[in-house]
Length: 190
Image (cartoon, rainbow, N blue to C red; front, side, top):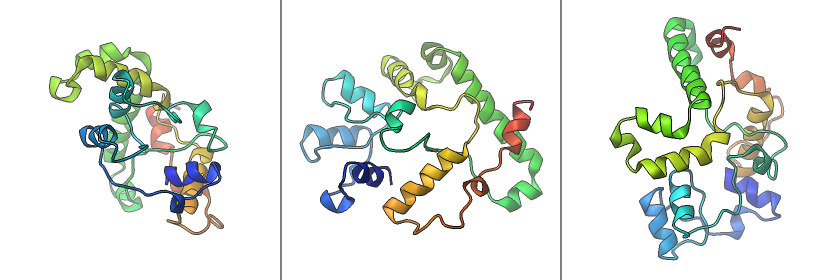
């Protein structure tokens, strides 16, 4: 979906390129090194590994708000914590507990250095500590400080789904109907 939006902004469509699924991490890096692909959409640590080795260059870095503005008018909602309405209704205390953990994690990441965070994680998660720290430092601007979702971020996500043709219109779709901040606000003490 993001690729479709990026190409549309540049005056092209997905029909103008060939999309090859190469996975992520080592398989994506191998595809770049072997010239099987000319460009890729990647996340960290893959992006940082390619940049640090001089084996790739960023054309667009959507971890920052400024770069995201090159494609969308406002922020873009990349991720979220999802469940069904019946789960919220039946188990609100469980939902609150899970949201509390995510909000605390967002706040911890926002208030600690990448080196401090990596030092507290198990070695099998971090793997190469230097790469992990550099990746987290690079990705940090894209991470929520508090878990809040915005109407603009969701509306831009919906627009990218129209561009990709996974939905046909946002007519009648209120972006605020896709998220419920009650639990996040409670976790934040608001």
